[in-house]
Amino acid sequence: MSQKTADIDRIKAEFKELTGIDLQAEFMPSGKSHNPTTLKTGYCGVYVFLKDGCCFKVGKAGKKSKARWSSHHYNLNDTIPSTLPKSIMKHKEQLKEKYPSAKHQEIDLLSKSNIQDWIKNNMSRIEFLIKDNDDPFALGLLEALVQYHLKPIFEGKNA
Image (tube, rainbow, N blue to C red):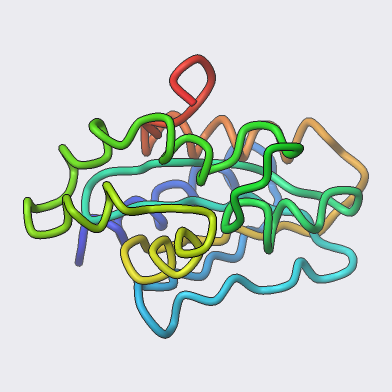
C-alpha cells in the first residue's frame, strides 16, 4: 500500500468515526488524468494538491464556492484570494526545494499563461467528497483533518 493510499484510508476512517458521515475520495495523478471534477450538486468537499510526500495546498468548497473546487487553483488571478498559483509565484524557491533540479528552470519560467498546465503536469490531486447536509462544521472538520495529516506548506501565513 502506498503512503498516499494509506493517508486517504486513514482520513476516511477517522472522519467516519468522528462524524458517522461516509466520505468518497478520488486520487488524480499528475499528467493527463489530472482533471478536476465539477463539484456535484448536493455535495461539498476538500481538495488537495501534492507531489510525492509533499502536500502543497488543501482547500474546501461547497455549493456557494464551486469555482474554487474546479478552477481557482489552476489560474493566476489577482482578484481571488489564497490560491495555489499565487502561492507558487510567491514562493518559487520553496517550491524548487520539493522538485529535482531538472524542474527548476520550468518553475522559474512559470507565468499566468503556463501555470495551469504546469500544476496539472507536476502535481497530483485528491478530492474528498461528502454529501452537503448544510453542516458547515462537518466540512470544516474534514478540511482540518486533511490539513492535520498532510501538513500543507502553502496554508495560512505561508500562502
